Structures are given as structure tokens and as C-alpha cells.
Amino acid sequence: MTKHFEEKDWIQVSDGFKFEVEMQEHDKKPIIQTYQTDGNTFRHMTVPTIIVENIIRLEVNRPFNGYVVVIFDKE
Image (tube, rainbow, N blue to C red):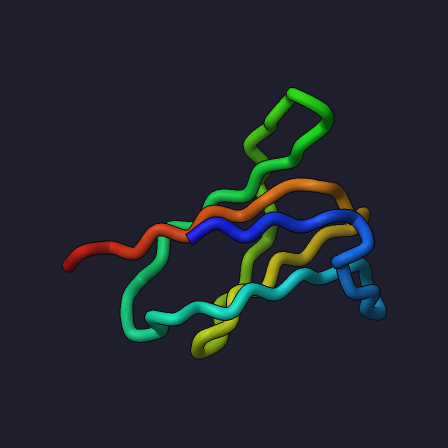
């Protein structure tokens, strides 16, 4: 699953910004990769990530354009 986002999609919280993605398969362990986009440049980002039930929450100090890729383990 791939979810694209823009700076305007981030929600401001008390200590920064968050972006949430709903998972369809909450019983499996996901592999999560986040990328920042800038024109034709794509950069892999290390972003603090929290998973609560079926929600993946990314937390950052400053919002950015990019996308998150969620891959589910087949086990």
C-alpha cells in the first residue's frame, strides 16, 4: 500500500506534526518506509512511527511532501 501526502495534509499537534494512515490488515506486522519528495528527487526518511491497532502515525517537527509505503509480512 502506498499513501501520498503533501505538507498541507499534516496535522499540527502540541510538539510537532502528525500524519496518519489507516491499515486494512491490522493483524499483520507491517514494514513501513517513508520518502520525502522534492521535484524528481526521492529521499528515504527515518521518521518516528507509532502503530496503534489499525492506524500508522508518523510524527515530525516539520511537515514535508512525500509518501509512505506499507508492506505486510507474509507470515
